[in-house]
Amino acid sequence: MDVNDTEKHVASFSSKNIDRSVIGRVGLKKIVRVKIGDRNYFIYFYVGEKHDHMIIPFSYCSCKNFLIKVMTKKARLSCKHLLMLKYALDNSLFRTIRINNDKVLKNIIDEIINLGISPTLRKLLHTRNMEK
Image 1 (cartoon, rainbow, N blue to C red):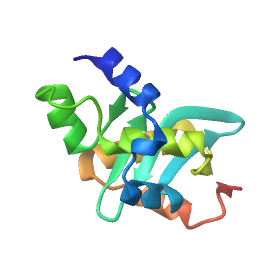
Image 2: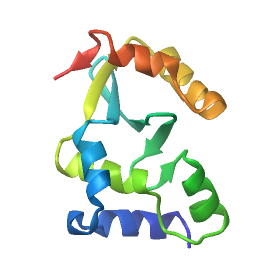
Image 3: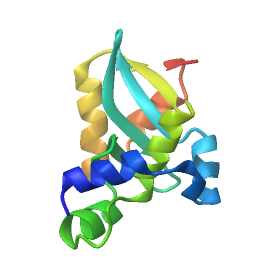
């Protein structure tokens, strides 16, 4: 199994097979897209109760399940966050935040990788940087 298998699995995933609890989380718009100026980035974030994750559509998630079961053990083709993102994109169920520059985006990514949670992202979600 490799990244191509993950991409094919996620792309072919039907929302009919998705768990109801996952749909509920997507409905709460826990998926966040970043926009700098007029540019959309192809990096999304999942804002969880205890942890945040960085997601690259169809191919990568920073969660432990993806890193261990998909990348290392090759026991699964994807994690639930990749499937949640596909469902969110298919149904426009995500939030978009506007940030000022690439340094803020880098800071969010660094926080998620090093702390497992991004105070910067959470602060932005509670300010007026959101698009509707």
